[in-house]
Every structure is written in structure tokens, then in C-alpha cells.
Length: 79
Image 1 (cartoon, rainbow, N blue to C red):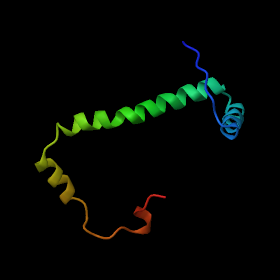
Image 2 (image 1 turned 90 degrees about the vertical axis):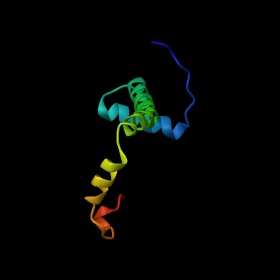
Image 3 (image 1 turned 30 degrees about the vertical axis):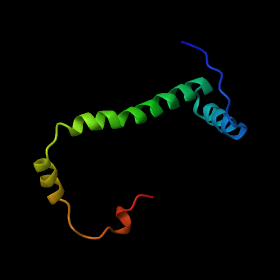
Image 4 (image 1 turned 180 degrees about the horizontal axis):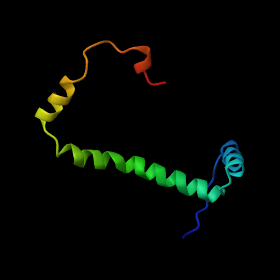
């Protein structure tokens, strides 16, 4: 492993330290996990792009036709 010096806003570091204490993991574990999650999220579009090349317009239209053509309800909206 390598060491990295990281500057964080005070409020952010305090929250990370508090959460780490409460949940029983180290600040280093939290930051490593957060970095890994961010990396996955940033690489995900590449994966989706590759997967999309395997699809077809016909399949897309078939799946889309199964979606009801009705207005969204409040339960449908992401909060």
C-alpha cells in the first residue's frame, strides 16, 4: 500500500471521523472504500457502453413496448 496526503475540509473530516468511530472502522478504511466506490461509478459507463453494443433496436423496442404509456405517479418519482 501507498500513503497519500489528503486535504479535506474540517467539517467533512469531522463527520468521517464520527461515523468511523460509531461504525467501528478507521478513517483510512472509509476513504479507501469511498475511493473504490467512486472508481466503480466512474468506470460503470464504460461497462454499460460495452454491454449496449450487444443489444439491438428490436430488443429495445420490445422492452419499451412493455412500459405503460401513463403519466408518472408520485410513487414513481425518485426523491
